[in-house]
Length: 155
Ligand SMILES: Nc1ncnc2c1ncn2[C@@H]1O[C@H](COP(=O)(O)OP(=O)(O)OP(=O)(O)O)[C@@H](O)[C@H]1O
Ligand SMILES: [Mg+2]
Image (cartoon, rainbow, N blue to C red; front, side, top):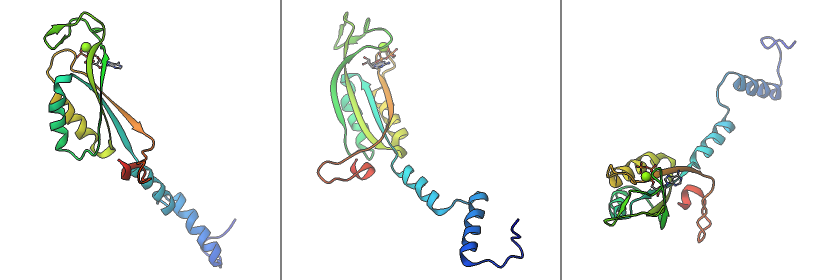
């Protein structure tokens, strides 16, 4: 067994002991810390919100106050728990299963996800059925085609 107190170490041995000690003392070794840092830096979320079409302008207004660089919207049709029945769209009661909605898709840095979700809810909520839903998904990679930028720089 090596006597750590009274041994005459070479420099290489000293380095080995230092690394061993830092690994086992819970002190982060710099390369590990760096890996954790870069992983966190990459974190992005996709927010998909299905909303009532007449609420789109208010949603846009609310989001314009936040740091949003891009957004996609589509006209979609869908149903929720009431299966489309009894929902009113443009004054008419729909008897079909699918009701027109707008789908809003945004990819944002993880840090502002909660703020964006909050802004969506506040701006589109009427309190009546069919107000919609918000889905939050992890994003693996973003690529900006023109510049080749990736991830947060590409959003
Ligand atoms: N589970 C789901 N999966 C995919 N899309 C959904 C889901 N639930 C709702 N949607 C979409 O969201 C739209 C609005 O849903 P809606 O607000 O009616 O949900 P809900 O659960 O019925 O809530 P509420 O009781 O307030 O009406 C639907 O028309 C559909 O496009
Ligand atoms: Mg519903």
